[in-house]
Length: 435
Image (cartoon, rainbow, N blue to C red; front, side):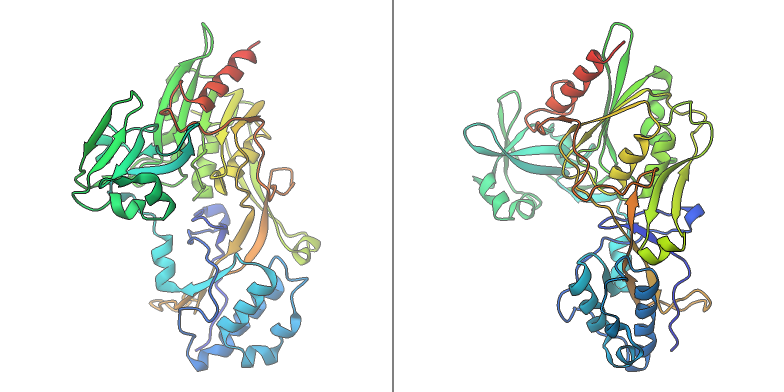
């Protein structure tokens, strides 16, 4: 069977499901994985091996980010005839990176599917030292989830699970399995100091990216909006991302916004771009570049580059100040949004911690390519790293992440709102920077 290179190019921010952008002909692909030696998936049939390896060879020699430093002997015609495709790819991976991946198409579909419903307790937990002991804090609760219905909020402490120490269960990786079992007694210490114990009935609840919002005064005449966004994705039936996230702030006439991305690992660049189009100031009268892709030396020498452009929406917020709360969990599309908006909004500041630093992008190939053979089911997905994300001016994003302009610890002791340290710091900055 002849295997062809997939012509429907799919650029992805590594470790994230990313964009479906018509201008760039892009579709979502899954979380990147490092394959293990030998792999869990069977190799292609013997009569497909040569064409399979030839596809990998072409991609490595043409678009692979590190194609000027790979061992070309591995990509010779002889190697394509003799190498098992997974052996060839694994050899490339060991020599060059641990970010590209190869896996079966069925696994690709499972990984790339965005799930908008869950059935569990509905909370995420993190450990923190409170000055005397480590405690397991609720870092966020999904609205309409089982624990939300019980009144559990960020800042509450999970003390015991089925009578056992919650800290010990978290450190041993047993916490989520335990709390998501039916009829498991959970003991919480509320922020007010009360201790409550109950069991939780699990039910299916909707997953929403915008889990908290509010408007808070920064002076006698001005207020700022506050939004906690945990991911950028096109949520079915909820309108485009920009309108869903920021539409409720339009009538308030805000000139500043605090965007909390400390738990936002990215996901869709297209959705992040839609969000950015709602935040551009009125001075952006034409389309602007949000992101550039820097390819390998061969493509750079040929002058080949790719960009993502956005245009300000007529109903956009006319911001002059944007404060973004960040942490090590802030990654990929969220980092691209931060770097891109810094070029256009008069004042952008980050509060919190340094972001993760996910700057690599991968290209997805389907093997065999179903493009000209309707009904043909691909068997494999191959995604080599082919570019580095860069800001609008072409400066590559920092691999070490974007440092916070105003450092501040993640305050797990308080719910989202004006008593929480990061938001307090952001509001204080806005107050002191008023004219």
